[in-house]
Image 1 (cartoon, rainbow, N blue to C red):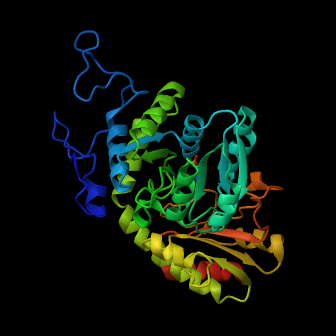
Image 2: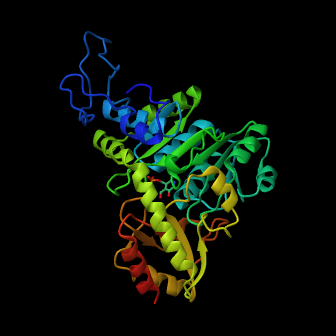
Image 3: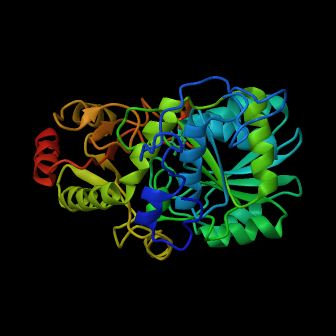
Length: 384
Ligand code: PLP
C-alpha cells in the first residue's frame, strides 16, 4: 500500500510497503533473490527502476517502506547490520575536524567505532551525560555536527529528553541522531520528538526472532537520505533479500510482541526490586528511576530490557548470568526468547577503562515473551 500515514501503527505494520505481486497476486512480498534486472534496451529499466541489487532490491524496498512508515519518517535506508547503519550516518555527517557528542552510556560497538575507527579519520568526540541538557550544552563546540543518543541506553537504561536534545542540537546547527533500537518505533518515535535521524539495529526487536542481522537509518530529510543511500551504494553494506524479508515479517508483529515484552519485563522488575540478592534495578518504568517522568512522556511503555546489580560483585554476577535455564546466556537482545548477559565481559567489553565503562556487577536481561511465571522462577533460582 502506498500511503498508510492516516492508519494506526498496527495497520501500518501490516500494510505499509506491501503490495500483492503484480504477476501472481502473491499477498506476501516475495524474496526477490536476484542480483540483476533485465532492461528493455540500454537504460530501459522496468517498473520500480531496478538495475542491480547492491543499489536496490524489491524485497528490501518493501521492508524500508514499512520501517519508514512505523517511524513516521519519509525515508529509510537499510543496511547489513546496525553498525553498518551507524557507520554510514557517521561517515556522511562528519568530516575530519568535526566533533560529536556521545552519551556516557551506549552500545559498546558504537563506542568502539567512534573511539577506535572514526578518531583515526580525524573525528573528535566528547562524552556527556545526556540526561542533563546543561551537560550536553557544555559539551557542544562550534565544530559539533552530531549528538548521538540512545534512550533508553544500553545497558544502563538511561533516559534522555529527546525533544530537549533536539533543541540543543539545532541551536548549535548540529543534528540529533537517536539509536531507537531499545525502544522501537512502537514505544517511541524520535522523529516526531524533533530528532533528525533514527538509527536501528533491526537485528533486535524489529526482526524480533534472533534470526537475522540488519540495520536501518530513517529520516525526514531527503538530503540525509540521499547521502546515506549514496554511501551505501558506494560502500555496499546492503542487507540481502532474505534478511529484508525476515525483518519485514518480524515488524508485522512488533506491536503485539512489544506489549508482551513490556508485561513480562514489568513482572521481572517487580521481583528483582524486592529480592535481597539484588542491589539495584535499572528500568525506566520504576518511579524512582531518574528519567522516569521523561520516559513516561516520550514513550508508550518502558520496554523489555532490564539491568540489575547483585550482592557479591563481579564473581557473583558472572555466576548468576551462567545459572539460568530459560534465559539463555548470550549477546544481543530483542528476540522472542529471554537472554541474559554480563555487559562488562560481553557486549560492553570495549568500554573498559573509558567513561562508558559499565559496573562489573551488572547483569543485563532481554526479557522475552515466554510465560512470565516460568521466567520469574528461572531467575529466582539463579539468584538463590
Ligand atoms: N545499537 C544498539 C543499541 C545495539 O544494542 C546494537 C547491537 O547490540 C547495535 C546498535 C549494533 O547493531 P548490530 O549488532 O546489528 O550491528
